[in-house]
Length: 295
Image (cartoon, rainbow, N blue to C red; front, top):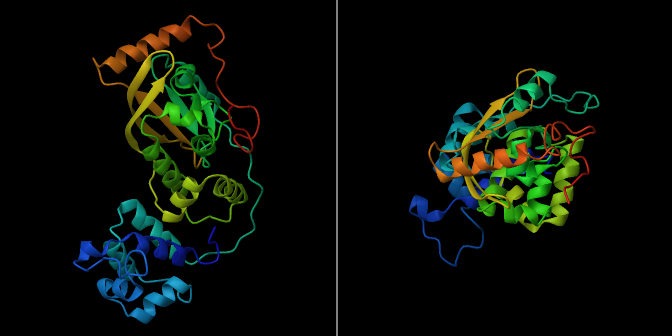
């Protein structure tokens, strides 16, 4: 988990992703390292090579805001990546860790989601556990069943590759989202357990986690293969849940007048006629996603 030198691990990962040609440097087969050399990063960032080496090795862990901005420019970090770098450079305060309570969704939010029969909606926790989902969300995506951990589902359940039309993009975004929700708190026992399990079982997860990409779920488009109505292209919006740090409400919608809108309406009518689906998928009773995987 690189918990002893988080800043250095992040800098090394991002340095290996920088392409020499982006800065007019020759690449070719003569380079023995991926990306740029440390002294090249230092030159581009306007710091001494010795100082940059100290940052990567963890001998200096708190660069100034000016250095952070320079490194973010060289690594082409977006706003979220720069904020993550800034968080890693902040002095850590050792504090006792109280046992984390199981994440629960407020009853009012559950009622609100149930009142959206035409809008797939779910709530994710800080480890990307599906804490709650309304029936239409479950019908759209079998990876959205309450109690399922979406990271584990995406990488360990073959069904996910059938559900998501663009699985590689979904996989990369899922790992980046997990890093974003974790922030600098990589010592969290639940996170350590989850990352350790997936690193052992999935080479694809291990490679993506090593990139140190950080992306917060905000809005976007996903394409699903649905066994009942065929392909669906749905946009989604993400909202932070006030009063429940780390929880995200995600709501999907189709483009008005599109085939996906008609398919989504058809799917809603199909599950409305099925009494077994009505009001059934709401909130998992136990600690979500700790060891459960759909299948």
